[in-house]
Amino acid sequence: MGPEEIDVFVICASDEIERGGARAFSLSRFDASGESRPFPIVVIRTHDNAYIGYVNACPHDGVWLNIGSGDFFTQDRGFLKCGRHGAMFEIDSGLCIDGPCNGKSLQPIALAVVDGEVCLCGERLVEDDRPFSAFDDHDETMEIMIHPD
Ligand code: FES
Image (cartoon, rainbow, N blue to C red; front, side, top):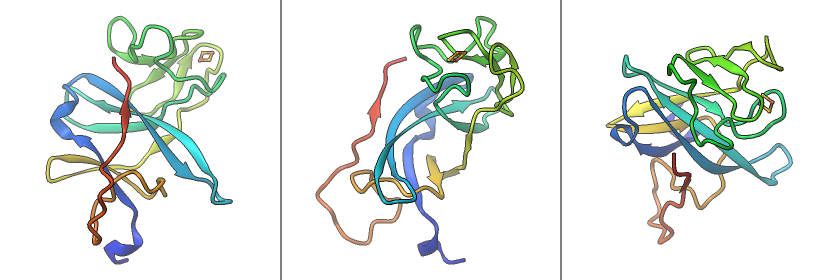
């Protein structure tokens, strides 16, 4: 498969997320019918320097995991948690191991780190997000809203 067949978008520089940290991004993507839909994601950088991404939506009620406190982690930083009813998720699998959605999983997203940038693969994001390989020189700059931690 040639690169033109893969949608790859730069999300942020890899060092914009500290080890053991996470960052939320509000993107938009096209659904199957071509409508633009909000696509909130969270990118986690582990202590082992792996980048893991999920749709930022709790399987219980669909809210952002960092709702309320703004934090994605349990107090010991060992798990992801939902700020609404306290569901806990394994960081590397997204599996809920405690809380009202026990046994369900966060929806993973495909990430790749390319040349020091965290990229999202295989999603059709709306056009005002900067493509990874822009052949045309659009004036529109990337507009990704970053929610403060
Ligand atoms: S909405 Fe996340 S635990 Fe209820």
